[in-house]
Image (cartoon, rainbow, N blue to C red):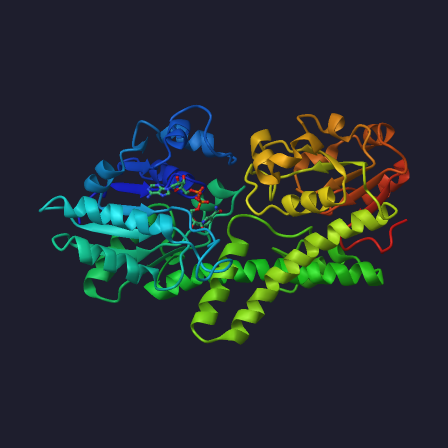
Length: 465
Ligand code: NAI
């Protein structure tokens, strides 16, 4: 393989953009081209207002862009030029057909595979290609990629590798600078091994060798699904205990801390909340569930499905609790939603619990005011549906959003919500004024002293007051 490699990526989204930007920053001698079908997205990557928000991303892009980092819609030219081709397109849950609601929709992914094959097929002396699955895909997808390539471009020497991405939105840049590990899976053949080492060597430029793990293809593919299933499982587990805490008078934060200091358990991912969201956890677990069913393992499928069932129940429980605490009716009452993103430090709203909670409150005929520091107005409209536009106010100031409200629901753990002037907010609200804290973020005693009726997940007995 040529040295230094030239690298491109199909898909300039939450993963493709930051991953390639960090790679370009860390390897100034490697040309990295990020491509996408979406012209607006590429134009945004080339502008001063990037298409996604991540702390530290702007600086990394500005340092490398135009030097060795390029954003382009000329996908074919990038495929032609590069040895390492990352595929980082979306793989959402199928919404129709076989496996609808569970299986991964590989439409974008297969189109990308066919595009690579077509470009390779068009030239008789194409340089060798290493195609890298960055998208999260079902186990054995690499076989399909190899089949598409083998069927269409007999002349090109290619290898298919799996290099799943473990970054978390909100901390993507730190995660990419200092990953716990990088995982590269490849065929167990001399050629496969060479391709794995070629890619692993790129990461080894900034990731310590012992943290660059190499496995066979199927282990790498399955590791990503398993990692997300385990992470989400911890949240559902602590959320299930939050309900028991509310029934018994135990405090879920105290319980979580006390179990987390056990080094066998560890402290991370033990924060009770209104539920997990994001584009990956639910989709990847459903994908795992579907795989288990396909491989004749219904007990394993059911086991993991419960992680999602518990999350759905937690969101529903939150909304039911709001209604029942407010004298069993929120009809015509203004409720303020603080935080709409699925977690802090991102503007991403995919699968955010706020969507479910808002829809349940709409069904109860509440009117909503929404404030989120990073989510665009159009995004909220598109998530909640055009039919509710006249029932929501979207505010750019949290105090205005809370003014005249009967209740506040905190649904994202933005740091700024910790330091709001709750006395000022209380004075402008209807009485009794309620706070439902779905992130255990406020100081309960202080807010009670102001006069609020406070409910905090896993920390307040039911019923409220
Ligand atoms: P995204 O939806 O933000 O980005 C995907 C991009 O691919 C879109 O801009 C789309 O226009 C483009 N695209 C689709 N077909 C294409 C083609 N044939 N050629 C070029 N571009 C094409 O998706 P995101 O969040 O970046 O996720 C990508 C993959 O990474 C998914 O499989 C996801 O499961 C996985 N992943 C996501 C993480 C996250 O935090 N968002 C973390 C780890 C993995």
